[in-house]
Amino acid sequence: MRNAGETEVLKRVIARLQSSLNLSSDRCFLTFDQRSVNPTTAPDSGVFAYFISSSFPEIDQQPSYLAEDALIGVTAFNRSHSLDDSDRANSLIVDYDSNLLELKRRVLRALVGWNLANSADDALYIGSFVKAVRCGQPEVLAPKHGGAFFTFIDLIFSVRYYVDACSEFNP
Image (cartoon, rainbow, N blue to C red):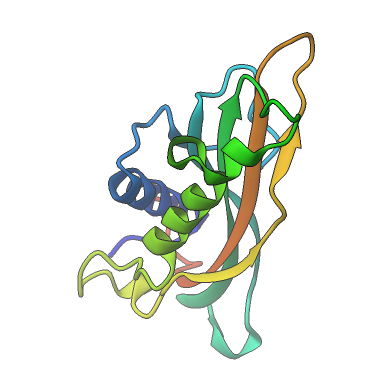
């Protein structure tokens, strides 16, 4: 049985998003936090995931079976080289190909209610269904010197998994 932890959870979240959203690894990837992606080098659209924080419920604390409630962030993003003629972001909201809110909905569909367990033998994840916690406001970063607008929306998910605090790290 593999030891659970943030690394394994993030790997599974990224694999799920890549598969469900049909995204390559350059458009769906792990990062340190939601602001460590450089908007000028990011692909035109995609998602990235990162660990936010965790807590340990007092009721489930044994060294070989420690419950950990983690918050995982997923940021959906896209880039546009211009706003609408009226300097508004209408096309970024309603056009299917560049629709940030549609990408958000697809991320929610991929993760909410998904069980991290790969099989019945994956005991450290049983009952670990992903739950949506919060979604931030869509944001736009204006380009410097004529570059592309970088639009993004942050989603936060929670998941409980169990850590064997006695075992060795096994990535």
